[in-house]
Structure formats: structure tokens, C-alpha cells
Length: 409
Image (cartoon, rainbow, N blue to C red; front, top):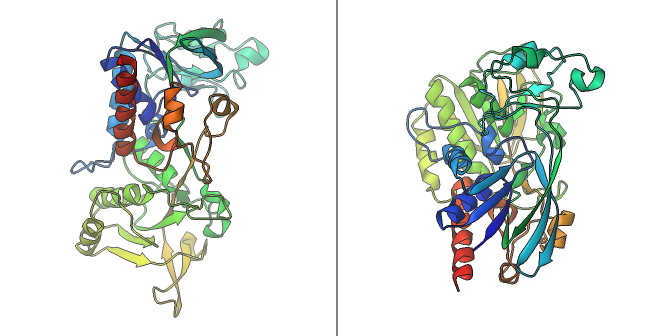
């Protein structure tokens, strides 16, 4: 097995890359963002009291391992421009955008502190993304607009800021391609009746994960205070013909139940109402969460889909929903409402995917096939169908094993 191209630096791509390296392959990993980790970069560990098997640490650990592998070339802020079939595999052209910060960066953050741009022009990696190297957004940076500002370079203790950094075009010849472009979260604000986008304290589950990851606790966006009465609403955007997400995203229940448990771990006095249509927690017995909820006096499970969220009294949020019997309408007030969103496949129908022969399913996913694999294209991870980090890792390892076995024959 010669060099293998891995497209995507999320849990699927990272796991496939590490498995291939362990089997003796050389890997070129291309990630369009500034750091590795995929969506898992913005998720928070749920194991304050005990490990809850959320998989977040797994993804970040794989990122660190791949970065340390001498036989793995990692190209960040990069995209595959083309991949043409050749006699022994594919000739791949890759465009890498400049970071303007070298690997000498120690992540101290002094550059961010002195940046005069509103909203900043130099940033640390998103969430827990690896490596911990800052980057400059050229479109916002005053140095590139006016040629005067050099404040970040002046305070950098390791002289890591490099305004002369330039885009690079590289070509790699690979024997096979792992296509692991992952997923994007559904925009909760597309369901306007639930208050997202108009009421500050209505947030998506992705927003909640970011806040928890950054602060270690959940805080209200409106005033920075810790909420005492919280609603978690399931299936926001999933199973929706209108939004084109007609499927169950499969893992949302798992993560929402773990967030709920984490919130009670941080503050046992939180009152939490959990609104759901169905509980689908993958391999875990659904009764486990139900038993946990029943053991908590401040937790309620409500089998109904909320109809609307409006501004209530004293800045509270008023959530209206039918009762479980549909015989009457209830209205409850909350300090914070979390909308648990599903996911859409990312990169399943790009021009690159089409050029590789990848076809999408009726639901928009790229399921892959034995025919594709016979041509050296392995589609892995949640771009193929909804799955959580653990299942993504298992399937990525299986794909790497098939690739290695095929190369050995």
C-alpha cells in the first residue's frame, strides 16, 4: 500500500488515518478547517462524575496521535481541487491556504488580546481542535488591508506570525482515497416558531456544547447567569420534510440525554424538562435514561413536541405544548431552552465527490459501495449515514482493514 489520501479531519478521517498508519501506509490528510477534530472539536466531555462514553475525547486523542505520526502528512486550511485516475491510483491536486502563523506558536493568546479588529482577526483553534496553533483571517486583518498594523507580531514571544506566508498548490500521487467529509448541524433557527434567532436564551444543542466546552458550565447568553429551569427539546429539524431532513439523525437522543445528565451533575438543583417524540439512544437501553430521570425529583420526561416559544414574564421563556394525551395545551416558563438538532451530510454531492463516482442516496447521504472500493475510493463516517463518534470510529477501522487487505492481495 502506497500513499493514501484522507479527505476530512473529523473522527472518521482521523481514525482511518491512524489505522492506515498502523498498518504501514503513508497518509496525506486534507482538512479544510484550521484544526483537526471535526464537529467533535466543539463538543464537551460529559464525564464530570463518571465517563458517559460520549466519544469527544476519542476524537481529540486521535488528532494528537495523527499529528505525531512521521508517516502522516497533515494539510490544514486545505482542499482537494481535483483527483484524476492514474495507472496506479489517483493524481491529486491540493490547494493549501496560508495560516500566517507558524508551528512555533505556543498558543499563549497574547496576539488575540492586542488585535484591534472588532471581533478579532487572529484566532485560536476552534474548541478543542488540534494542533493548538493560531491563525489569521486575511479578510479581516488590518495588516493586509492597510499595511500598517503588526501588533500581533510585536507581542508574539516565539515570533510565529508570518505575514509573508502564501497559498501553496501541491500534487500527491496516492493509491487510494478515504472520503470522510462528515456532517453539518441543522440550523435550529430554521424552525422560527421555537424562538431561535429572536430569543437570546433559546439555543441549539451545538451552542450548548460550545458554552459548556468554553466555560465548564452552562450560562444564559442574555445575562451570563446560570439557568435554574431548563427545557431540552428533541427532534428539532430532524424528521422534517420541509427542511429536507426526513430521517432520524440517530445520535441526537444519545447526546441530549448525556448533556441532561451532565447538567444535573454540575448543579443537582436544576429543574429540567425533557421534551421528546421517541427516545433512540443507540446501543444503550432506553430505560437507563428513563430510570435516571425517575430517580431525580427535578427531572421530567414529556412525550410531546412543543408548538411555540415566546417571551414570558420577567424575561422568562414561555413554552407552549400539547399534553401527552393531546386533550389540552400547557405553558411552562424556563430560564433557558436547548433545541436538540439533527445533522445533514457534508460534502456528499460536491463536484469532487461526483468526479470520484460517489453518488448520493435519496436522503442526501453518500453510502459508498463495493464498486467504489474496487476503484480505490472508500467513503466512511457520518457522510454515509447518521452515526455517532463511536460507530464512526468502528466503521473507519473496518474500511482501513478492507483497504489493507485489498492492497495485500
